[in-house]
Length: 225
Image (tube, rainbow, N blue to C red; front, side, top):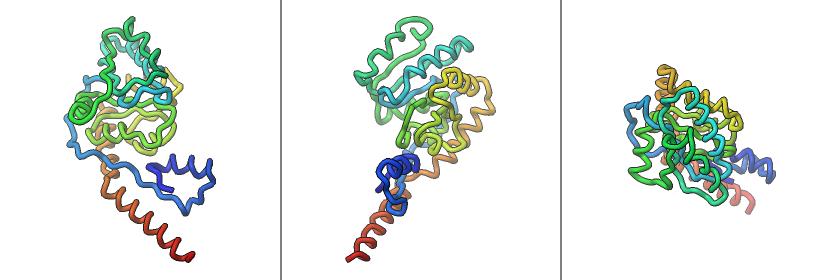
């Protein structure tokens, strides 16, 4: 069994009874992007498919609470395809306080995707579950502070670099965003720690682990023949 995170490996072992000695974790690698100059007044960014487990409805409530505390907070940008199951999530975007402050740019890739990170003051990912959480790694590669859910693989991916919040805690998510905007030292430390954390993830290292896993599987098969 090969997975991209310890979190996912643990779930599979528990549900399917897989022997831990017959599993390997091969994480995703960081993109080959260079760090950006941190923009403390850049937009707040959510990156990912807008589906129920991504918890965007809670993010919108938290952003509305942030605006109540900080009326001049940066705009919220939602980047990702919208699934039919979440079509109603955007019902409030045309009304205050979200109107004119939140925009959905749809699916993005390539240079546009990278630029959205470079222009961001933070990335917020309040998912109920993530098998890995590639947007968190992409943000750290650029040097953008992250606010992530306490569930799934997100805490594993960001380590000590991000602020970890309960995905059901609207006030907690709003407070985390407010802290990054109002505490330059915290934002700077998160940015610097993210750059260091991102260096732990490379496609070369992942490929090497994959080859080791295949090699171990071949040896086990040979030993039984």
